[in-house]
Length: 166
Image (cartoon, rainbow, N blue to C red; front, side, top):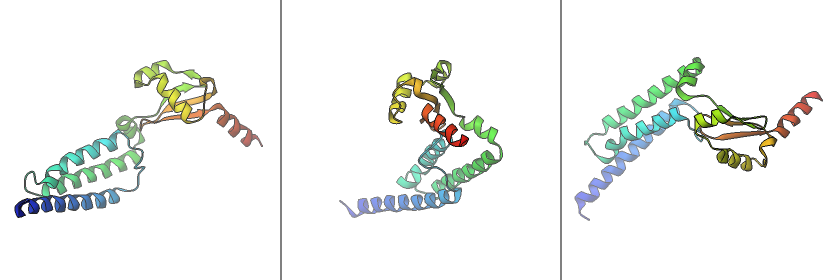
């Protein structure tokens, strides 16, 4: 390898490290959110940031500043949107969505499942993960906004009711 090529690679590594540190600081400023459970809003922001910093990291246009400005702007817009979502929950519902009921008291909600493009097999798989073998044992199955399917067995509802009556 030539010295010029090694220098070029070290520049890319340095740019990548700088962008990473800037993003880490900016995400920390954005605030604690459930990182493991992204919604469509979070995914769109991360994809936009990735596109915005790509050239800055790989020397695409020879300038680090546009990538930092781009990612910083996206983080600030994300912080503003988060504050708006807290103050205006209806805006969040319109932008991010709301959970969808897939099973109600052991009955399939076929129209909701078609609308959300969820199959019975996907719900059955989620039921198995929650230790529920039969649809009749499900109080509710909910498609969450992050795409996960939550299962509440009827036994959990009965148990809560009995503990409240004591």
